Image (cartoon, rainbow, N blue to C red):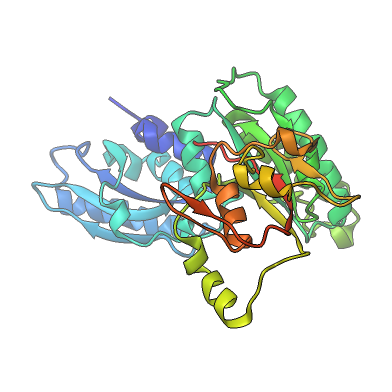
Amino acid sequence: MANGLDRIADSLKSRIENDPNGLYRIRIELDNRPPSLSYPAASRLVRRKIKELFSSSTRTEQAILSQGDEDHPYVKARLQGITIQQLVSDSDAGSLISTVQPNTDDRQYFNPDNLIRTIIAVPMLAKIAEDPSLIHDVQIEVNVYCEDGQPKATQRLKELIGTAIAHSSHPTLVQPGDDPQGVNEWKSKLSDQYVYASLSGYAIRELVKLDNQWDQGAKSDAPVEKKNKDWHTIYHVWPDFKLRAQIWCSTATVKADASRRSFATTGKGIVWAILDSGIDGNHPHFKKYANLQLPSGLTHMDFMQLQPVPLLPAQLTDDYGHGTHVRESSVESWMTHFTARYRSPGNGIRTAKLRSRET
């Protein structure tokens, strides 16, 4: 017979271990009560204990939602992970509980934790829960309120990432196209607010744990007037969501055709910088008009590597076709499935190729 924390279903227990302060919609089964105790009495005892635990909790959104009957002895509630652990460990109320399961109706109700509250974003938590050995591209928001200041917090975050990877003894599952674990330095340099990295689920959890340890250590060493300050390095960990190309009738959608008719815009003499999936350097139009040849000081760049790589016009490719399509819109041309007609051959084009992997 289950007792204590063993009464919590494994799937729920794992979620609570990852985020004990989170809110969880649960169904508390009361099949463990003695024959001498009626269901209404057992339900009252459990609900009374839950309300007692509310007073020591940090979450005001907790609530008892409903209860069953003699044929369906349960209590449904929205409780903090720590509250659930305390409830099942209680010598009186906990002994009446047979199991605590995730509420199967959970998706029908508003859960405050679907908003930004946890350090690790809810979509990221879901990905980690599926398989913590997988490597994820993450976008880590630096805590701008860190007492050390943002520059020091950013530097420490990079150091903590290296430590988290080293401390994670679990094997990682490397899939084709995955970057090695670590900080994406060139991308991180583009932002003062975020650090970009590739980390396994295990490393992400370890990173948040190390940051909490740093905060506690800094507070204990700080002078009295700074003991209540925030020393956390991390504000939030997001998935670095993949971008996918969408190709449709862009010229009409962005009203480029109307602009041509109304204002006689040709774009001649303008160098366009296109940040997209690439560009087809062998396209007949570009070969005919040589408008991928750039003025001095401008360079085509490939950002699909960990470090940007300069490219010559002959090296330009576009596996998705979207960048070439956007280029078509910018030079006042229109294309069909069978023929392509182009105007404004005088445009110079500068392109940059973006990473665009499928998940």
